[in-house]
Amino acid sequence: MATPQFELADPPSDAISAIKFAPTSPRLLVASWDKRVYLYDTSTAPGRLIQSFEHRAPVLDVCFGENDQEAFTAGLDWTVQKLDLTTGAQTILSTHSAGVKSLAYSPRHSILISASWDSTLHIHHPSSTPALVPATIPLPSKPFSLSLSPSKLVLAMSSRTLHIYDLPSLAALSSQSSQPPPNTLTLTPWQRRESSLKFMTRAVACMPNDAGYASASIEGRVAVEWFDSSDESQARKYAFKCHRQTSAESVDMVYPVNALAFHPVHGTFASGGGDGMVALWDGVAKRRIRQYQRYPASVAALAFSGDGRFLAVGVSPGFEDGREEVGEGKVGVFVRELAEGEAKGKGGK
Image 1 (spheres, rainbow, N blue to C red):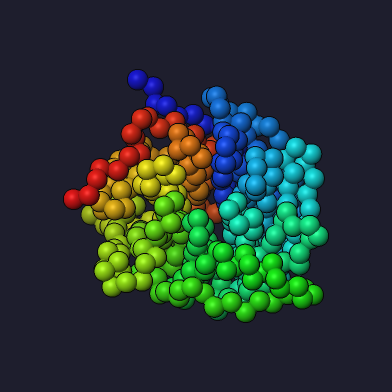
Image 2 (image 1 turned 60 degrees about the vertical axis):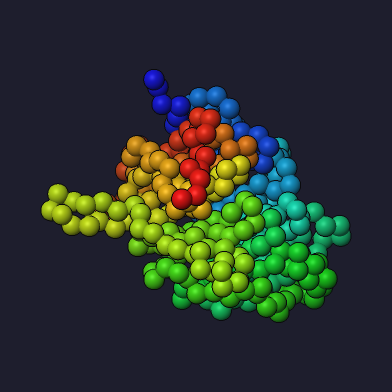
């Protein structure tokens, strides 16, 4: 039987930085270091490139907004932009003072959050009338990854620091702050935590049931934690090794875990690593559900569709193979249709 997976036609020409499915359709956005954002229709193989949108610098992150026609982009030109996917119009919402690493939009609170290497968050209200000045929240260190649950923002930074913010408070306070730019807002995080991982955090992803999050590091490990600060809940947190191989010389090869994504229905999660592997995990039962065949390059990004039927895998060469140039044919996006129950957990022990 043929594998229910296909590779998108017309992929980016340089490394992939982010992929995101639309909230209610099989549209897929792909951000790349080739200074473009690509919009695909993935409803039928091999997918169709609807349009690409050129930017001034490599694009580091992309996300959809309140509907399938609105997107937001950020990258090395320091700007956060609104992108109309129908007309192609690009509108600058704010400008940081360094590259913008991560973006996330909360449809429940109608806010867009950007995290920049200038050690700040910008909180935007893109649909507000009249337009509000984006609020700036100073950070103690450089942000590496962020993720939203229905009520929380989890932000992973250097120095193994994690901040968790309450989204309703963030939305309310930023909407009331009306100073001239930079409109700095002093906001104490809901929780401050030290990472359970000993090495640099590469990715964080929040559970869709608003209970907690997973984080991944450059040293082939994933940690699973819960928001509840009670001793009983915190005793449940754990970390495990993954994306490792034993060489012919019996040397343990450790790869970075570059990407995490939670299934929106079953609450299981996928991890993608520098070894070119993607695995599905049941975080509650602490079990691996399955591992897929090796992809042709390092896994750079993962995304589940809004209904959980599809898993998109973005691959592009990492530094794991010792090369500095992108090899031909090594950049691509694979879309896998999941069978009934393929991403369902195995239940508790």
